[in-house]
Image (cartoon, rainbow, N blue to C red; front, side, top):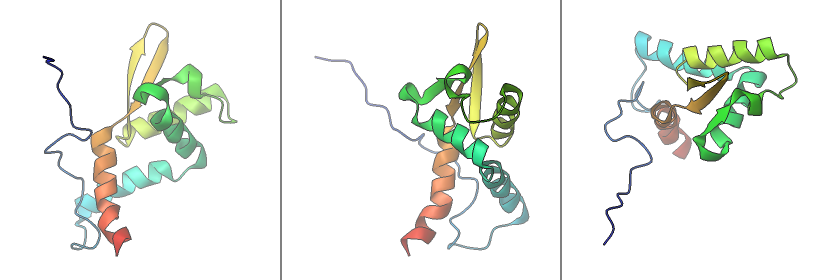
Length: 120
């Protein structure tokens, strides 16, 4: 008999940043939070970095593995910092390298914000 436990892909009880767009108009604070996330992804380099982290095996990526996006290393660091400030990524330093991972609760909230409106 196994004691293995299946964990949910999305955290149960995660409070979305905002209601779905077709549910009701966003309040000022809700719009501010959503705009911050979408603004961070509005830059092509940031979107590429975010995609590289999100699609990396194991759900996290070392900065050394995702830096080849056509800009200098200081610029990569700047863009990763902006993604962290927007709450889209988290990071952990391991020795000299920093590892980034996508925040699943934020992705779930962004998806919920758009999902119902897209299904119409």
